[in-house]
Image (cartoon, rainbow, N blue to C red; front, side):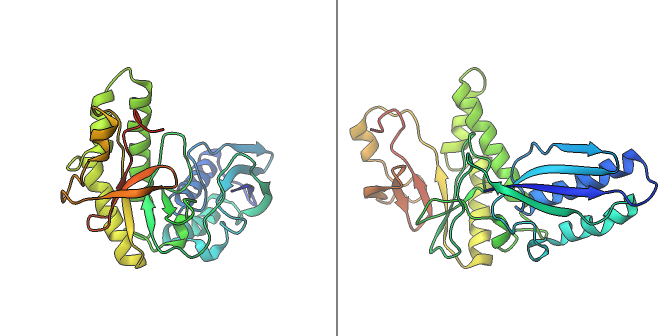
Length: 256
């Protein structure tokens, strides 16, 4: 990923409230299109210039060719707040960020953790994040529903990692079919597969269990089919059901 500065310049008299609303609306739309990553988006004020420091999946992520209809509308409305179109300055590759998946992938998976702020869509071959703007929108012209699912999953993961409140409820949401989080994720995978023509799998988190032997005998929780793999995928996924398009792991309590 790349560190980028997005500079908004005031060209006429305006109010701080109008400027703040216009810039924040623009940044929100860019986030929901997948062009910028993360929720912490500091904006530095220097006279008549406002500079947002953001992280982007690729050097050209902020190119107009990637704009969703919502981003384009927000950009057009900057003038109403007395702002010019933003100048983009790529500062360089971010040392602590993920690389980005190559253009082609034969399958995708919907996966995140509380530690990841990158795209929740991963390339099946490389396990690298796929920029969301590369994919057709799942609803209403952008990828907001995918981002909101990722935020909810990450919140559940954080709760179960902390282990102080709502741990069991969070684990159930992440690891059991039929929960609201599962149904939303499964539906998003299916919708994304329809619009992208690329098989898209959902990750089911697994922890607990009685023993390694019992874990190895687990069957797909949806179709009861045999989904155990001879070798794990990316050292994480020990199970893969091509019928239900699910992946999972041997319980982290017993993973080597």
